[in-house]
Picture 1 (tube, rainbow over the protein chains, first blue to last red):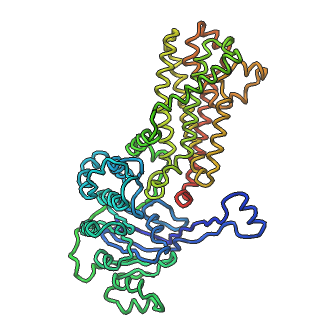
Picture 2 (picture 1 turned 30 degrees about the horizontal axis):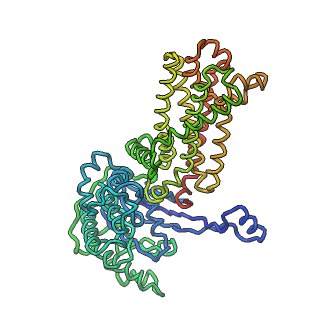
Length: 262
Length: 304
């Protein structure tokens, strides 16, 4: 049995942009010979392999396809072409605040969310106190999550996801909403995940936390894999993009290079 | 492919976390079978739907009974009192109630199922759930609301001297199987389509109107046979009509003074054979629904 945790082979996912929604608008557009729809590739022919226990920082500008790539790995979406394969149980957050139902209470949402992530009832009950303690939402546990502040919402989502015994943990800008103490707590917990040998896939714009958390950086640029390699080189690649080619970067930081296979 | 080297000694060597599972696509979904494999999640979703459907309303669950009951009284007044249909049909109220329960079950499944994926978009967009979960959960919620109505029906029938018999039980099971299969199939088809064009939920509510009048509920089957001069093939091709006749076979027939005469006068020949064929057709429709759903599923999260 191999040791790869995530294998992405030539994965492509395109989205359809629809300019005109109603039949009337579509007819008018067709008469004027305008395009009725257009497609763009959110993830374009991306290939990489992640070994079990690696922690990857996924970086890139807004709209470069990071979340879509995460959704492909999570299984929310399937690639239009190419393959995405994973090993073991996946947990994590796609965008802040997981799929909570606003009308249900925090308690009910914990059970529902845990069940979606593949936990059994007994497992959830066992970890329930830990989850509540981590989320630190106090007396709001039994009120509908629709009334939560965005910070509480994010905290609860993270608390459930991090307590799943997963083999792969995906985190999409989880720290964007939380306050400083909570960010600190999240980082510590994620380090725990990483040090336990679980695969970590972490999306962030914060160079500092990526440097702290990850041992490899993947950079997406307009859906394409632009960089795959060492942390410092990757962070440099994102920040000082102008003019420099990958080869230059690669040779500059050859020490840090883990395996730029593009 | 990629050689992994631990970075330059600043992190201590990590324990090896060995995963026994094979490398597989994360979205591995085997449709309806996956739904029943994850029964615990299904149960939570059903429970959630039950508590969420009438949340914030004063009467709550009671609305599930107010709706069919008002229908019952309206139809009873118009058809029974105004059109005098209850003179030709023994126990016309029970005849009608059999139909109302079943039609209400189907329509609820169909309507709620059609909207189920759009309603649950937060889950669909952010978590990897088999999406067939939502239409199936809608069907089970509707079934849950139907049960007390059957209790009422049974109580009324017992008062009129009805006793359970084997053929009746078989008829009831067959009827429920038909509606559950067809309801799920239609909910699957329409829920996926509704993501692409919200017009679909309007089409669904028009179709539920047709269902109401396309079954022998407010009029007896014998009237159809008489008007069509015995050519009821197309009428009986509707599995919902067959299911209603089966429930009438299970409850209404036994409540009349002379059950054999009622069967002869008001039920079609070979009802059971026809219904088994009907159930077969429903299963085929369910298969088609699953196929279409799997085809459309890929595009669902991005189109919500």
